[in-house]
Length: 146
Image (tube, rainbow, N blue to C red; front, side):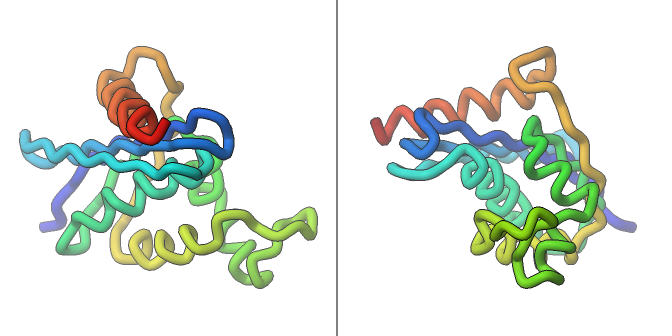
């Protein structure tokens, strides 16, 4: 039977680019794993992607993943298939501009392919306690680099 893991992620950046942080919470059968990190000079979208990469990287076997993020960039690119179109076009977007964060997308796509992932966009800074905790983790990490 496939394990179902709930993953909440968030990224934060002070200035864009600027010092940034990310946070992730993995939930499985009442167990909780909390991850966070940051970088001195990055962007919000890079931190959002890094949170998802780091969380999925924790999974040792293929899982059913319920991924929650307040990042439209991450959720829409994956759920609407944009990232796969960028990849097919040599990392060029529909507007003929280069896709951003290709290095991170290239790390993320094999992780996504390993699992069955359902994407959930959640409103940031609202009433989702796990998203709010991820935001606190990400913000605290970003402050370390100021």
